Image: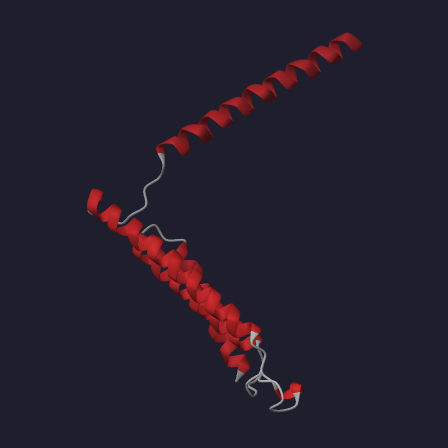
Length: 139
């Protein structure tokens, strides 16, 4: 049974990751939800089998269930809820401004990338000139 849950978690992670790589905020939102559910399933599977409640003097401590995976799942649920609320706010704002939820390329990022490439080309030219001058001095 845990092998089936592990494959289910892997499927949720894979599908969620694919959705996160899309350009629409609605698909990104679904991807965050799928990754969150995948982490919840993975944490519950890693907790092992069930046991009895960890109340002192009720049974042998080796029969108690581990509460840590359950606490981690609750934390994961809260984090996923916060990220989902933030993405919903971004999607709503994008819809109000552009009437679409497509994430556009940032023009400034393209400008910075072109500038970095130009600076790198200039630095390579200067390095080649220095190397040529050093070879001429040796000769």
